[in-house]
Length: 307
Image 1 (cartoon, rainbow, N blue to C red):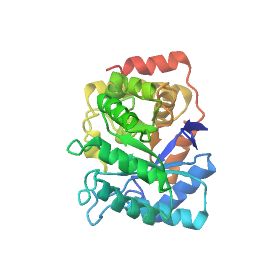
Image 2 (cartoon, one colour):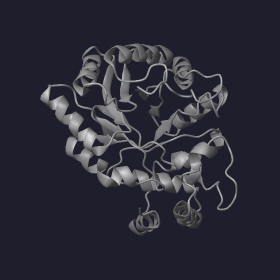
Image 3 (cartoon, rainbow, N blue to C red):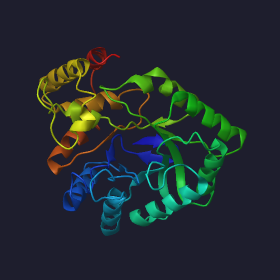
Image 4 (cartoon, rainbow, N blue to C red):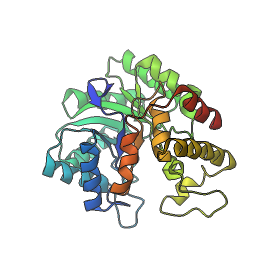
């Protein structure tokens, strides 16, 4: 188990963005059951999941997870996010309260373990929304809060503001980070996290499925995530993928297992976040929780994916 302040979490966080979208309710529940049975306990969602699907309004993933929790009573660490819902955008304290009440209701939880600001709100004095997170902790509505998709400079600034106002500090950062996208974390965010004692829990750890190896150079992109994959499918991206697939084949492992193991073994990372749409895809993720790549193997992937 890894530590995020007072929270003890598994070395892989299960992403809930697919629940109620590419994974229907029975499949989502089977994935959650399999993840717990495989040693996982850390689940990530957001109030926006899956608003991009026609007919969805956001909160679908939280409802799936909440219904599953009610029926099983598993002890899990649950993270959700606030601030990007198009009808409830921003980090105004009044908005945070409304959104938190909705997430708690859908999840069936009195206390959210980790509540992320899903994006920055530069038009609002930071002390206001940092104070709101502090109050929610004091009232027992959340245990900790984190920052998702923030820059290194902003992380430092917010931590300084929190200290100056005697407010609770964030405990976690959730940036994009993978073999296919290393810029922000290695360009300063890892240092900002270390300076302030923040855990990094990357999202998009498999680059929207690009690092699973299912996309082929010079072939049309396909599937519900094709639009998200497009910016990874460059010549540099495929060079990274070639090295990943070659190493995975030599180890008789799935590329996603190796990609997640590389990320998990990064000194800056506590637990990468990844999702699956079928139960059959889950073992590859679970294997990444214990796989340890050798230093030459890590270096080979790092060199192939160097920015």
